[in-house]
Length: 366
Image (cartoon, rainbow, N blue to C red; front, side, top):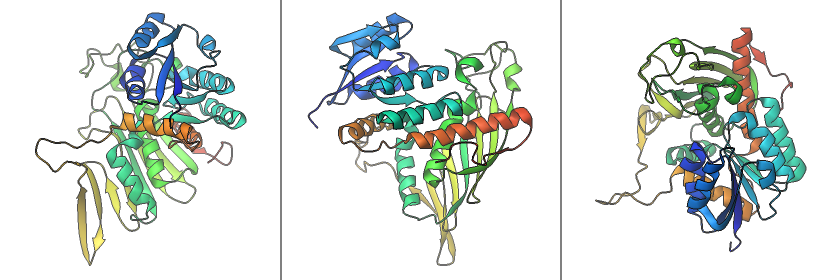
């Protein structure tokens, strides 16, 4: 564990500054040695704040990838460039953490999986919500079989009015979609992971462009420009899995609903159920009576002390780096993230055609 892992950051914008670089900076075994952004002043700022003193700055990621010092690349760019940068990084001999969603299309995501297998390098996707305390606890009890066979799930990513109006979030060409591919992807990943079910059979979905048409709309980050709002404002999907389980996926940046929940899931199994609506709740039946248990995730129990628990981004970064140091599988496997991308694409396709999308071996299954 004395080896230093050297990291290059490609894309020094919001998500790199909010999540990736701060969490990596807390790890003693990590040095950030290269920074790249098409706005090179952003790369310079990141290098000054997080670089190891000999950090290099680039405006072209292909030049950064020639740096033999670099062990790991973190891809923090718009969705349309995830696949190209990830594949090039893997082929350059680097391990890769790519920010979610895995890619803009399922075909691009498959290229990424194939490149990882071909090169023997590790690839993971930035689904940090798996690393929350409630998610980790729920995954544990599901793995231990406490809910029995889980045959129904809901993936929740609903914002009442919180449309991201900066960057390229509203640009369909750059992002591939709106709330479904942006935040719905987190909820779906969480649901599939806790259910341990990655074999979809048929998908039916619908995307909506309704509130996006409104002028001067109330919004957490200020009103959006309807002319620039080229992605959906809400999208919903119904997913039937090969084993008969069903999943309902709901995602929205702007909708007239009060039940706002983001990156959460609800599960129902033969022995019990769980949801994340009011903390983490486990329900079931025992001795002829129904019960609901609220899981206490606060680790303190002492006045003026909240406990020392890693936040999800820090835990994600640490376990990712440890998977490289110890040559173990990352928590988020690329094959799992590929299935998420395939389902999201099927929802968009179903919305466009008005027909259900049958998998029938036409897409890679996990």
